[in-house]
Image 1 (spheres, rainbow, N blue to C red):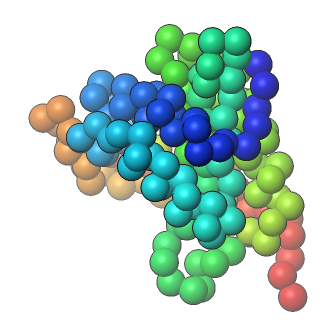
Image 2 (image 1 turned 135 degrees about the vertical axis):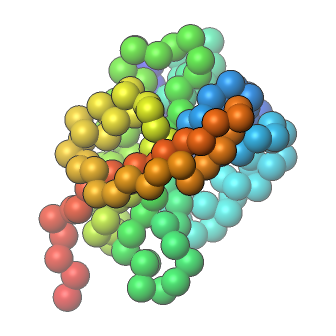
Image 3 (image 1 turned 180 degrees about the vertical axis):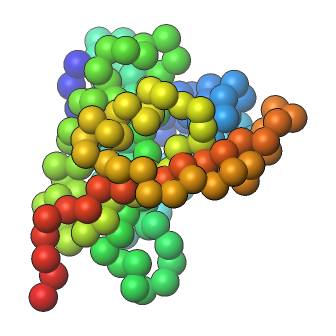
Length: 167
């Protein structure tokens, strides 16, 4: 497996991975599948603001992706970044998420970010373990803030504060 920066031609495979979660999981609160054009639009929006986007691939193609995006739109949040990772269904427990987060967090450390935030719809033990493996700590838990598949879903937030000090 190899991790690398995503490119525009990856959008179709990335959308396929994401659509599995839209249709079968509460890992995302989106409910309608997206096409490659919409995924590319989202990727380009992130790139325009210099947010990282990585993919992990094996001999069969892309098996996962991770990216950062703006945490909140207000200027004071400029040094915070929200991160997400998705692994292709059927390739879980192969350290794909770990490889992607290792690359993503390394990239984020090199940039001018102070707080790294991961939102996790609960329950999701795999995502909790991944975030805590990288030093994230749970800082918030919102009960029943999402509704999907005819049930209420909680969301927790995990945060990693980087050692950088801004002057």
